[in-house]
Image (cartoon, rainbow, N blue to C red; front, side, top):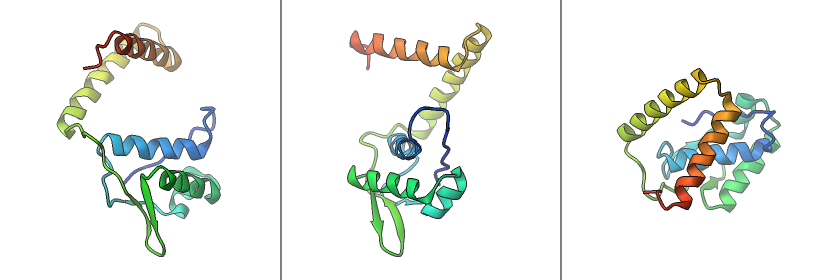
Length: 132
């Protein structure tokens, strides 16, 4: 079960934050085809947003082919990750990243600084073709 969060200060509309969270959960293999998404009421209550915001997110997911509404039954994931990373490998990567975050924090970087550094490194390695 996915646990949604919405950050009012992110600058990203709440419905897009919900869409991105489902996309990421599918990409990481946490959601697979046939999984039922929480009801609109559940999500609206969970993240304290208007139910229409959740409906908009679910419609966007349907438009993208990532979800399918079934009248009277709910909304279900309609896609799977193209090449899911095994759970154990994901855990290793998350642990490694947590260590990097602790080092960056000790060096004095805040979340924005870490995000900037990560984005720069990702862009740099991608442009060099190191994205293997």
